[in-house]
Image (cartoon, rainbow, N blue to C red; front, side, top):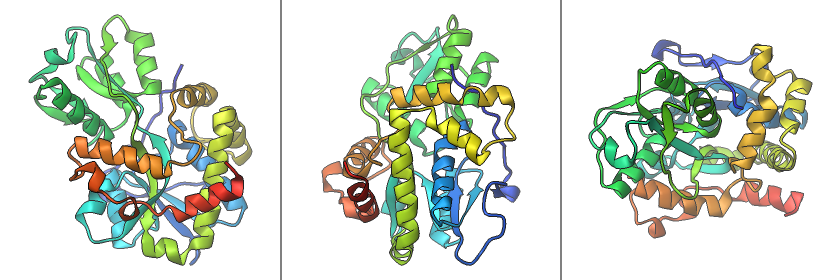
Length: 328
């Protein structure tokens, strides 16, 4: 079960790529959305929601950036309108009124290591590989290291869970943190060499939609269309994960991927829904509180968590309106 996704590696000089399924001509009212990743099976549910929003009148252009922090910087600079990532630390450190408004996915990740590292104590002083500096995987690692009273040795960064498990099977890295699908792939293909270490209870936000509060206030109709499409899609997906592949076919999304990979879409979303990756209520207040606790413990937010104000990090009005319209 699971999917190998071939991801594009972008250089700093070519950090931006627009997709063919985006609006072809950038109109003045086109919403520019920044993704700090590439389009893949993991992002397919969001792509479906965007196309549904487009049917309801949202003009958008989705652009990928090589790293999440580049996408966040594009929002700060005003180059892009909506970002996808986890901007908590940036919100706290800058005066730009960036606000989250919909939780895309949760941090449901699994530490995996060679069998010679039987426990976390065995990784004290040993090399460890993360997705990227300052991201959720490193936050998880920091919290666990503190819990286990250990310190990692050399830290390296390899974007993409699928790339990290390939590197593990090639013997290039020995311990890392990967997503649900790729954990299952690793254990099915090389479970005799690797095992899963104890992780954290609960799950903070991994990917969140965010934008400048001033832009949200000036684009209420477009934001409402987008949030309503996301909420509807997330609720349908949680009831029936196969809806994502059905909609992929209807919108002809990810058509450039090999057929054998697209055949695994249903399997991925069944796993993801069972793993609790997608909140049918889009995060909101509960997500904000969980995120404060998690990111303070991870050292990415200055706490204490109880002193942080939700309104300083989230614009709740669009989500609350969408939930009211859709019903609980």
